[in-house]
Picture 1 (spheres, rainbow, N blue to C red):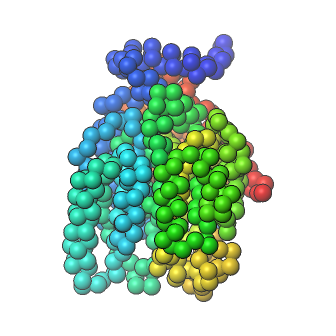
Picture 2 (tube, one colour):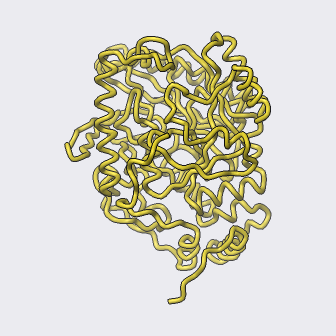
Picture 3 (tube, helix red, strand yellow):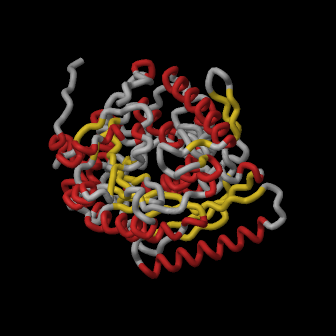
Length: 478
């Protein structure tokens, strides 16, 4: 059989334009972005996203996952959806949704983030409840009132198109400090209604003009081609204010730095000692970004993954795997997700023009429960309870690495939402093999027939996924 050579980006665009008109009966000549992604026509994609969002309203309760050679059992968080407030502002499938989450006590940060982004946002508002507390119904009603007020205020301001979801989590009193980061991230992803998503914590501001730059014609084609065709995650370099600043000073510097939207401004602020790279107390978390190269670069550049890397990313809504919900509290939550992504063939590339800035805040109750000493420095130390919890998470994390390398880690990740997005329903996407654990698709999920020309187009767009055993689970750290 004659082997086909990989097309250039220009050829890819022309091929897609022609094929999509034949297969989908849709012409997108007015805007190149949708043409590049039209393997999922708008109606089908919207229907798919709607089904996933509805499914997310009823995650599987009290799900226990058993993984690793030690067969460690972990009960996943059992979130309940207590309210949903959707924005009345319209946005296109070809926009980008910022996915985030926050506890009630930090909901004020959502307003600043919303304004800095200016586009669609899905935010999960978390309410921690004590198991068997007779006052839970009252707490839920109070939280609903707060959420409704927050949403109405943000709708009136018009800073972004906010979809707000209130979720409750009833846990024993001695576990209330362990924030379920990954479960909340999954809830946000499930409700995004655009082709691309930006995964970002609520205490970060986005540099001014970031969304507009990404949605510009050439940038949009590049981003869509990168995330869909080349299976890439686009990294946004992260910065923070220096710890010598007061909370008020740091907040002002963070807002000014994000508002500037300028690499030259950021470089000057770093030289002045007001801004630094994010999380210098944990260098592995963002070292791979290579900040010196970012400041020199005017074009995207590839990032070499290092164990412990946990950047903030722009990624295809369709391809991003679920976060592993076994991780709650501090440790391994984003690291595990990035490790699994790279293992399954994702490549990383840095955007040269946009960035995010951490907004300083008082440490959370969860942080204070886990650590003692100066916050967010190399001098902080784990409390007795924190050390026990992080040791448990480390065991699960190492089991995840072993499972990924052995090829037995669930394709969908470990989540109570696994049934909401089986691969058989991804418009005919081929499975690599049988999934195991809670990530396996339900037996009733039938595979949708795919037109041969559309299947051919997809094959030309997707990079081959690396074999599990070819993945180096312990890359060199720097």
